[in-house]
Length: 410
Image 1 (tube, one colour):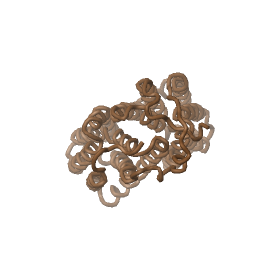
Image 2 (cartoon, one colour):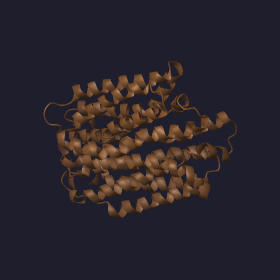
Image 3 (spheres, helix red, strand yellow):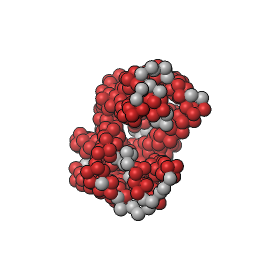
Image 4 (spheres, helix red, strand yellow):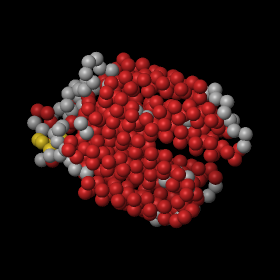
């Protein structure tokens, strides 16, 4: 029965490079399609009949956040089903679901349909997180940090390119045409996933092993719990600045017309730094161990956050955010590798699904926390408070690191 089968650890490694290429390319295109709407979302909400500045902003926030909300809920479920029925099947499901949902967004008639479709994208999608599970379980463990770094670069590049395309394409083909074009690109990803990704043969799991599932199957859950918390902390660090960035940049530039441009550059600087460093730090982690890289990245980012609270020009902030991106770029690949090394194959997808959910939680908590602290205490406090959190995370990871080998029972 497929429901009681898991991947043989060595099977399918002959295909892992091609799988990585397809997953990285597919994750890039799906993230582009997910984020392409950011520049014009309020305009589309207004086209759908919402009037009044406050209502447009509110519905834009609801529509944008709906995807993360639903994705956080179902990520462990899709991870569990990937363990039971195959990782490739989950990628096929995700790409097909996103093709349908994003294409239909271009045909929405009111804001309620748009929000419902955004919820559906979160429920049915998850190509990038599914790719992480497939790459983590099909790549030789000695190369997992590098491979996951390449995949992470593709994901972050998509989040960087998507809004740029979204700022240009609607003027050429219209907002509705942009959604249809995005759906068409995802359909190509669907076809590539169907015909190019290969999974190895599957073996039956002994009954004694099947009786131990979920957390009970993990020999030592402490490293896994530490990585779930670290993933959430990473997203908090990246997202806490979002609610205050425009206001903070406004204090650093002389011309108000430059605020949005400089704010975009500040956000892009961190993403660019992460794109450049992810595979390199992943390769370094394969050589010296994942825990030293995780602790070092958290500690360096904590230090880099302190001067961000006291910058006197926008370009100082851009440089510091770029350096912080370089430091944080290897975190997600290392987090995934540590989880992969410390859980059996039969529950790898489920556990990585929980990791995805924890990161979505960080994406929600980060802006809320940053906005509250920035509004009630002051904007420098956002950077200093996040620095304290990152330093605490570095200390906690140093304490939680296993003594001896990094890998757990598989």
